[in-house]
Length: 242
Image (tube, rainbow, N blue to C red):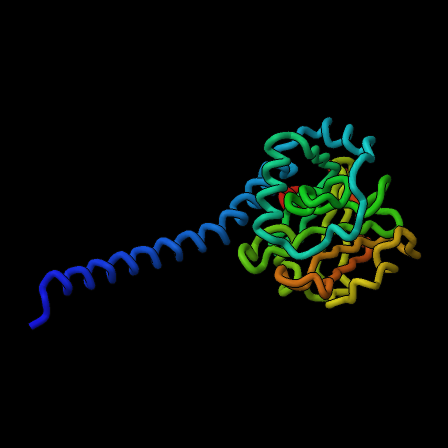
């Protein structure tokens, strides 16, 4: 007949092991999804509706920033935590100079100077100093968060963009409406697509095709079709940036 004490020990160890596995699972989930919350906080903190208009116009005169396009890589939880810490401590200054909206994709994020990790994890960043909306090419980049938060940053653009979709930019002086004419997986070597030179005013949006790989880019381009002074734009267009 089995010893009762031995049976109880086996049962207790089974319970302990089960609890440990549950805790490990919970820890893994938290490890994966806390960065999504941190990016959400970044995006909302620097939303155009939370930034003073005069500050936005002032920021447009400051071209300081990291413009290294190699920053557009796949996102890791460690990268997000490090960027959030720098933002919280104030060691990374994020200068909001405008905003980007894609109504169909439910995208509404701020445009900022440069391509630093903190910028790419908070909004869309410019490739060059002195970029001008509504003139030549206006290239922007941001991260793809589809693995853990498919609704953030430029993530929705990858699966949900069609030719003809509207893209809106604003520098708080004017609102610019673009119409999508290119939306494809693209090799990172196509640096010609993010040069400033263009025969007509266009916008170029760049992100990784997958958040778990930086092997390919997903690029959307739109041509300028309309422009309004900010205060005279249709109400529904202005609300795209809220």
